[in-house]
Image (cartoon, rainbow, N blue to C red; front, side, top):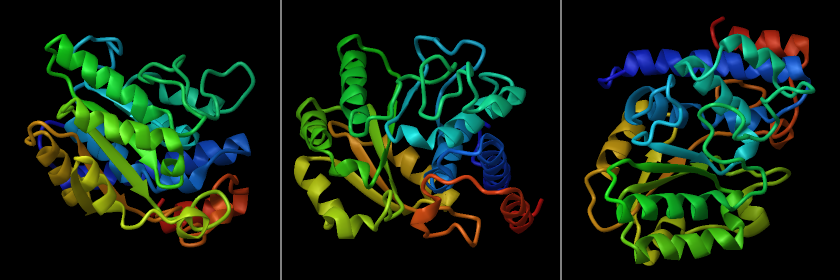
Length: 272
């Protein structure tokens, strides 16, 4: 989509939620909670903001996207399949033996820039890619999706200091701030607040949005491209398991697949 058609983006997000639930249920395993919370973020990037060409996933001038929270692979695979990087039929092989659609994102899948799973590493790689673009005078952008539990990792804070040091204004990090990690609330495990102030103090341009509001997300992504001399950090406040009443805000759906009856109930809630 070349224009900001929020109605069309909203319908894309609804379809992505359906597909995420179906592929995780069919596999009998996966991470639905953190995938559902990231749907609007990925929709905004791939259906509105990012420059990419599914027919040429290695196109040198493409914008780069790095999903640092690699366990949310269903969300990225569903998005890439919809955009044409591979067939939607292949989604049925998710987490099957010999499938390239592994439980954590992997570079064998067209459109995946970095294999992730070990948390905390994506932003460092994004820094390197953005710095290389600067040195080579290329105008592509680099986007990196992080989880809020993930940014407790020490390497994240080294990367947070590095990006402003090199004035990486071609880098935009987006935080899927759903407030929950694997077993407990993020604030209970290791509180991150005041989150915005911390990143501002490191020298980032910080924006905070409702991570399920496609208007706010697309506006923030647009603004990120206007700032000079600083990277942008978008705090997207989200709900884990968003869109399914019995999954929303529940840690047990971090890594649990819905049974048949649960899938049917979830799809009905989404209007399918």
